[in-house]
Amino acid sequence: MTTRQVLYLSHGSPDLSLIDHPARTFLREFGERLPKPRGALIISAHFETPGLVVGGSSRPRTWHDFHGFPDALYRTHYPARGLPEMAKTLVTGLNNEGIDTLLDAERALDHGIWSPLSLLWPQADVPLIPISVPMQTGVAAQLNSAASLGRWAEQNAFMLIGSGAATHNLGDRHFIHDAPDPWARQFHDWVIDVAARGDLGAMKDWRDAPNARYAHPTPEHFLPLLMCVGAMEGQPLRVLHESFMFGNLSMLALGSEVYRNSDDIKTDDLG
Image 1 (spheres, rainbow, N blue to C red):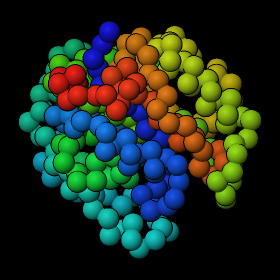
Image 2: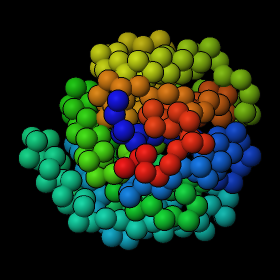
Image 3: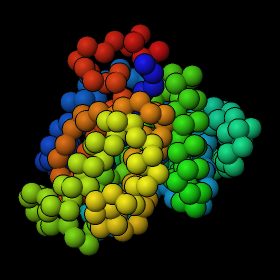
Image 4: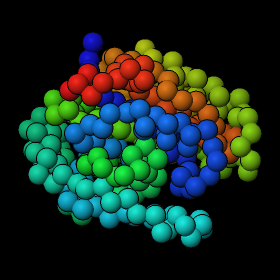
């Protein structure tokens, strides 16, 4: 059984840290029980690039990459430090494996990173290496890159986190936090089943899943989830939290087996 520390989070609206929602409560409470890793690779839906890119800033700025939200959100800063030397080592290792990877030495922390992590680790005391979603490499290559990232994270006692949305059709969101429509629930349930089985074949054909094209008119918010499944190389990801925001926006959280009984986790158990 792998000891890989993989966590998938649906980050929802940028103001998640300000609103009363079950996903916010989950992240705060889970973070209190979660031993802090040496560092974290974090794959954000809002870091879109043609191929794989690794962020290597030593002090990445907090990027407020949205508009129209309360002033308090724009005053939020998440001062997590980066790991530029380890980022360079990761890039070199991926390129040596034949995975074309670039380094972005100035990459900021977009809201897909700092919004959920400000709840999980409010002291910003876990160093971060941002990882992009490679939009043009094809699903097989995305899964292959994810497997390499998972192995690197495990070897270096890092956590790998994906931040996206299990369903993301903003054109069909509700304006209240009520029950999801059947299409959203069906795709959400498909994700849970595939992740629990570690079914890489189903992930390769994810666009054929029930309501996939409606759940994700564009793929960027699904790819962090796909890459978390890929990082597990056939091992399961289990449900840690389920809820919906604005009706049809899934706030699903998944974790590898080391998080099944998070109340009993000891730091030594995680390497």
